[in-house]
Amino acid sequence: MADTDYWPLRRVRDQWSVIRRLILEKIPLFVLSAASCVATILAQKEAFAPIRAVPVQERLANAVIAYVEYLGQAIYPAHLAVLYPYPEGGLSVAEVVLALLVLVTMSVIFFVWRKTCPFALTGWLWFVGMLVPMIGIVQVGSQPRADRYTYLPEIGLYILVTWGAMRLFDKWRHKREVLAIAALFIIGVFVTLSYFQTSYWLNSETLWRHTVDVTSRNYIAQNNLAGTLLERGQLNDAIANYREALEIKPDVAQVQSNLGNALLREGNVEEAIVHLQKALQIDPAYAEAYNHMGSALMKKGQAGEAIAHYQKAVQLNTSYADAYNNLGVAFLRSGQVDQAIADYKKAVAINPESAEMQYNLGNALAHQGNWADAIACYQAAFSTERDSVKAAKIRNNLAAALEKLGKSDEALEQFRQAVQLNGNYPEAHCNLGRMLAQRGRRDEAVAHLREALRLKPGYEEARKQLRELGVTVPQ
Image (tube, rainbow, N blue to C red; front, side, top):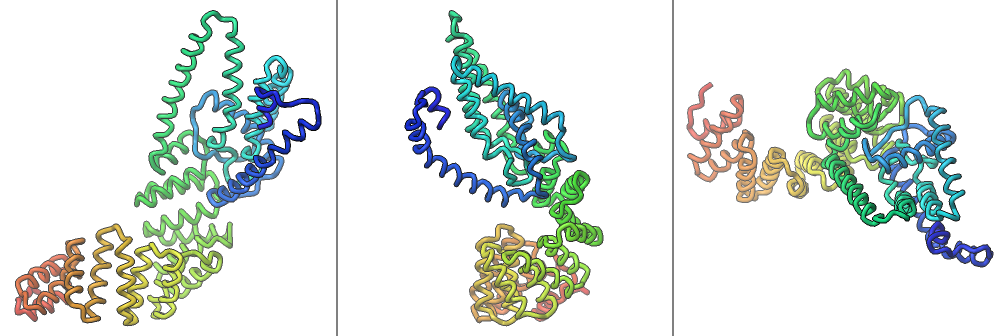
């Protein structure tokens, strides 16, 4: 780096030829840095799409404040978070002026000391220079700064402090001992803090809960915490956090849509629709909101309107597997089997690892009488399904398809495995009992049919099978 050419290598000379050579040899590093910047911008746009475009003057002001905050966190690394939001209402002019004054003052001091303490200027320029691509001048997301960007820039501060300490205690008689003890103490403190900090990264919930605790009015953290809780089935807590996020920033389509989806899962369809409509008012091109609105309309029995919303979702996002899957459900419910199969196939092509989508496609193919292809889909679904209840349903339908193709032995085994996976599955018990009865294994058949009737007292098929075996069935 150019800083080290100045100190400690002292390669910088007044001759133009020397300076030109030093610049030319850095060109590969500049190219790598540029590539890294491009990769960072692309990755961050995917990870945290900005809610609004921040004006250049605000980004410059934020960069000034961020420098000072990074400097303060390097000295006192407390209340660190994975993501910091832009302050609502803009930045304080007084804070920006004060931060700028601190940076200018330190820069002037280190420049004045450049001859007596060249390490100070090198360390400072290292810190300031390496942060330039990540300081927020180029907006790459919804966060003004991120602690993870400071690992390499802080090396400059360590250079400044280490050589500064050596210079400060240069004439002390026991400076080595004093500095060694101080270094061990500082390292011990930082190791302890690091231990506690890494504990917050145990899982998504602990990470976002900590972020909510140590930052203020962080709607992004509230939204992400809610999403984690929703995945875990904690609907009430998820909804509460989505509401808190909207109290902070109500004009975010993603949060409005997420709350609508959570309310939909809770069964509160009408309120879900209100939030989904707000999401689409904020961002008429938000595919996810159209998808959730389609699901809300399906719950209201409005399949035709739901199909229109799902189709809008896939028009806006042609790789939206969930929307294609939902389209398949809607078309199948409307009796349009061929169209349902076409959309299920698109969903599976995008996400072949989805057990639900493979299962749905299998059911549609079975509805059409395409047993061989249905079997292939059920087998693919079972290979990725980890939930035993869902896996039992897949086994049951797989067995039914095998039975249709005359593969009774394989069908019998699949029905048996369905019962083993979920002993409270009346349909599997009934199907297994029926096949056992066909093979003359009456006692086993009766046991499974009775169990099916116990689990589902109004199960007419189980009653029918028992009557055919001469078993009296109470009404």
